[in-house]
Amino acid sequence: MSPRKRVTIPIRPEPGSDLPAAEREAVLDAVRLHRDAEGPLLPILHAVQGRLGWVAPRLVPLIAHELNLSRAEVHGVISFYHYFRQHAPGKHVIYVCRAEACQSVGARELETHAKRALGIDFHGTSADGRYSLEAVYCLGNCACGPSMMIDRELHSYVTPDRFDDITRAP
Image (cartoon, rainbow, N blue to C red; front, top):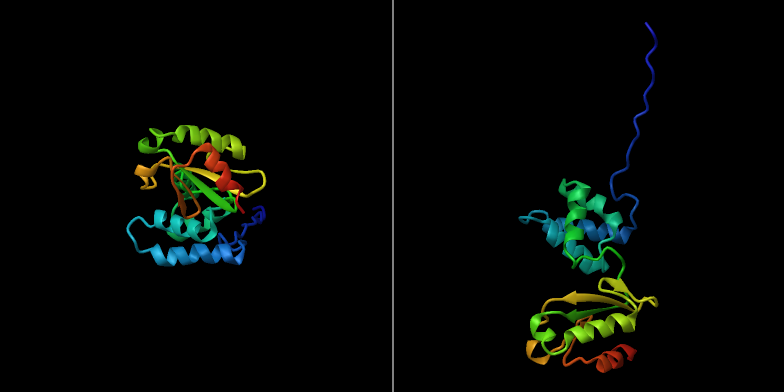
């Protein structure tokens, strides 16, 4: 009888144990708050992005572990919904309304101008890190379009020239 060959079993650290404390705490707080809700993943992702500004790919294993989901399931939800950012946003986030009411009064021209002026497409961040550009499908400001919002400040009747004035301000 030959001697048994020793097999090494790797020990894997708990998911998220290597995350920065603020990120780990953001995820765990969101999980504690929403774990018992029906379908807790979306509220958890919203809470994490609300606190950190984005859902970093390095957070996916911890979220999956805490909800007993696969990493693929969590990543699938994050990548399906355009609202969730997988990259850190710029200092300010510009939301351009793409709903029909705004399109009928010049939103397509505004969208084209914004992309050209910032040098990015939707879901991108300007080279200086100042602005991220996102599309939304109604800001509830239909009578005053085209509309856009920067962070939480709503802007009405936005023309390409007005866009330039607004984004030049400090």
